[in-house]
Length: 164
Image (cartoon, rainbow, N blue to C red):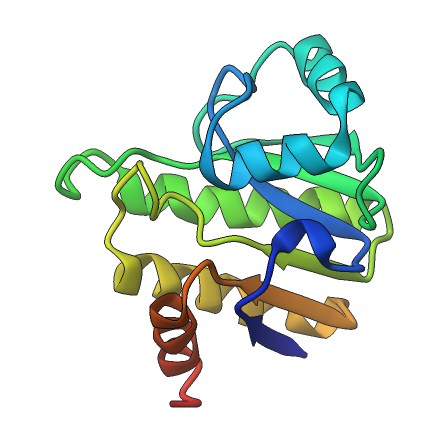
């Protein structure tokens, strides 16, 4: 089942939350900053040991102080007009995140709106990619959550799911 919520991702009780990370896996703002503050300093130390994460890939750490058991860090693409493989890289973020979750036997996962903040990916296009991949993996999870930062994003995801 795919749920769309407008909540703080760090409060969700799921097996894994996905972090919209940077390629260096260094502390950032937005979703990344909120996750790191909630998880505690151990998350920063775990990320340092991973040695980065190329765009379109994902890495896994424990959730530490979060309700989620794991954090899947994925580095989304920076929007450059759409002619620099951005769509394929964003699709890969979802595939790689789901792959980590399946490899760990996880049953519930929550995603933020990857690349739509400071990376400026168009929100409607990003939501379509997200929803397509969530639907492709839906039968392998008990719960997939699209965790939106704003009511506008929530409406975009509901529309992408045909629930507007």
